[in-house]
Length: 130
Image 1 (cartoon, rainbow, N blue to C red):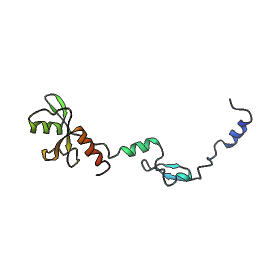
Image 2 (tube, helix red, strand yellow; image 1 turned 90 degrees about the vertical axis):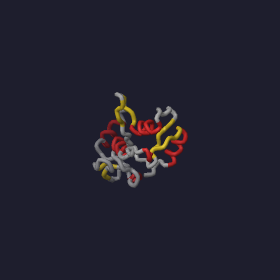
Image 3 (cartoon, helix red, strand yellow; image 1 turned 120 degrees about the horizontal axis):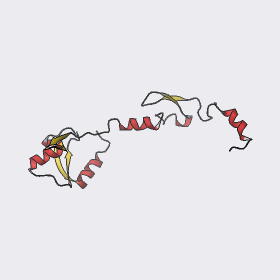
Image 4 (cartoon, rainbow, N blue to C red; image 1 turned 45 degrees about the horizontal axis):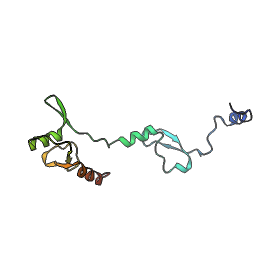
């Protein structure tokens, strides 16, 4: 329970704009809805909520791998193409790398077998590049 001296103060400020708002509004970069922000964040804040920020970060990042059904089992197409070319199953430590980084381009010329360490090193060196 609040002390009796604070209750009139709370009633006096209820419904008023926050002191650090400054009356600035900006449209959200994701949904376009205008939102209030403090002057100190006018150049850096772009999203109205965490949900809009998360939605904006996930756009275009999701990489899809084509899956196919072989003998009733769903498998990744690029692994199947490589296994067919080699005539054997890939070992768990063998990764199939897309040379041009297009995960939907499963031509044999675009695929290479790398071990897990090489693949991680190669992927991290290209992170953020198109």
